[in-house]
Image: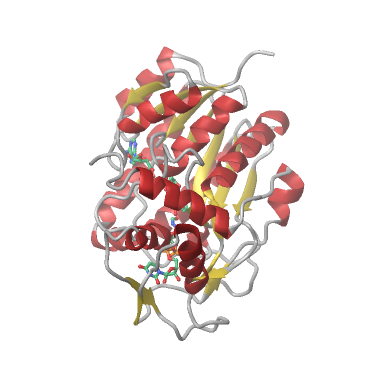
Length: 340
Ligand code: NAD
Ligand code: WQD
C-alpha cells in the first residue's frame, strides 16, 4: 500500500508533536509546518531522537498565502491536520484581533491552498470551549454551542466555516475534534507541554509548584456545585489524544464522511483531585491557596465519548495518575522547558 502523506500545521506544539510521532509510528509520511510562535525548534531534535529519522519540516506561517501555496506546490498531500492556532483564553480577550487574524486567517489561507491542490481531507483542532456553559453533563456533540471569549469564538467560527465548506462541496471530508483538557507528556520525558511565561492551565502550573519553581497554586473557586467545591474537568492524556487523531484521519480516508467528535475520557476530576494525584506522582507537596473564581469558568465539564468510541473505535486508556506521572517526568527532565 502506498504511504499516505499528511501535513501537520502547528506541528512542533504540544499536541502536534505527540501526534506527529504517533502518525510516524502508524506508517504515515509526515511534513510539519510551524512558525515557532509558541514552540521551540528543539522539538525537532527531540522528534528525531524519538522517531529515529529526521522529521520533514517547513518553517512557515499558515497565514502567509504564498508560503502555503508553495508548501502544496512542492508535494502532494492526502490530508492535513490543522493544530496551528493561538490558544490562551485570557490573552484572547486582550488581543482579540490577533486571535481572529491568526486562527481564522490561518484556517482560510490553509483551506484555500488545500482546495487549490485538490486536498480536501482535514482534521481540525476544535475545543470543548465551543460548549460554553454546558446545560447538562456529560456533554454530547449535539449540545448547544456558544462562546464566551474571542478564543472560543475562533473555534466556533472555524467549525462553521468548515461545515459550510462541506455543504458547498461534498468532496471535503472534515473531522472537527473537540478536545477537553489535554495534559501529560510523552513517556520518554523528551516532549511535553512547554508554556512560555506563567502557565495559564492547571497541570503545568501544578508541575511548576511541585518542582519548586512557583510557591503556591491558586485554586480558582471552592464554592462550585461539585463534590469538593473546586472546578471539575475532563483531563485527557496527550498520547490518547494523539491516537484519536490517527483514528479520525483513518476514518476520513476510509469513509470520506465528515465527523464532529468529542475527545475526552468521559470522567471528571476536580482541581483538588489533580493536586493530590500530582503529589502522589511527584512525592512532593503542592501548597494551595483558595482564591476567587476565575471569570468565565464553569462548575464542571466532561465529555460524552460514545461517538468517538463507537464510530472511530477510539478510547482514552490513561488515567489521571499516569497523566501526572508523565507530566512530572517531563517537568523534571526539562526544568526550563525547551527554549531555556
Ligand atoms: P501549542 O501552542 O503548543 O501548539 C500550537 C502550535 O502552532 C505552536 O507550535 C505555534 O508555534 C504554532 N502556530 C501558531 N500560530 C501559527 C501560525 N500562524 N503559523 C504556523 N504555526 C503557528 O498548542 P496545543 O496545545 O498543541 O494546541 C494545538 C491546537 O489544539 C490549537 O488549535 C488549540 O487551540 C487546540 N486546543 C488545545 C487545547 C489545549 O488545552 N492545549 C484544548 C483544545 C483545543
Ligand atoms: C482547569 C481547572 C480552573 C489554573 C482551558 C480552555 C479551554 C481548553 C482547555 C483550549 C479550572 C482551575 C486553573 C490555576 C486553578 N483550551 N485552575 N488554578 O479552563 O478548563 O480550559 O484549557 O481550547 O478552552 O478554557 O483549563 O487548565 O485553565 O483549568 O484553580 O492556576 O483548574 O479554574 O477549574 P480550562 P485550565
